[in-house]
Length: 365
Image: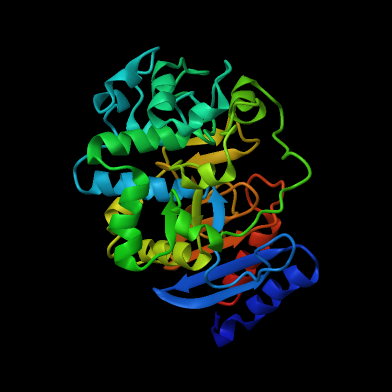
């Protein structure tokens, strides 16, 4: 564990979460100017409390995975292989069906495509068939006029972003993440987990209630509230093995924070500052049609200006995941940070535990 002297108040806040019975297992990492200033973990990786949560524990990060997907696409843009302003159909012709021919890459990544989920029933197992699911998405009619509003795409985002990436790069996002970022930089980040790593994964303690989705509409129902809105019908092992760049990443908090910390400085090995700024600039803002929040979206990342969930920085961006995880980059203060846990809450964004730690960390600066 690493706790710089000025971050002792943050240590006390982290310990308090466990003393108050709010955590099963968790880790919080805070990187400043490329140096790890704080990295603590505690608790249990198993529900029966027989296995400790340690520095090798991998945690499912759900939609925090979208930040990894956004970075992978941004790397293509920065290298000149893709433009945010070109249409998705220019690299994936079948996607242009059913009135989607004008949807740009930027609109697709900022949840403006109208494809938050499937209104009509699909087999839950189809989510494990990449080609089959992408074919269904390509044929789908948008739920709202593309480009007129954002509506969070909790699972479909990963297939849209992943298929754009695959058609330009030739590899899956999971493979590219390992080959281009995780292995060269020594980061414990995965989209699609090999069987040999399963023993490190923290068991989840799921919430006993649904999140508050606000007023339910067709877009929200398709995104979250049908039996077929998420993968199912297969084992948890199949879920871990699958590459779903919107939902099934596994990571340590330290690796996420170090990745975001690189973005916050010179971006070495990840993404140059100009590419970071282009990824994170606002593409749309306003009341989201799926989430009960006013959102500001970059090209695949949540911008902090509307929520303040990632500390005080207005230029800060990142992503949160179901149950409470989050990772963010603050380029103004040159900070990268991440929180992971295995006791999930019902909060869709700005988990109260993460907010406490983030606010305590900034107060130490």
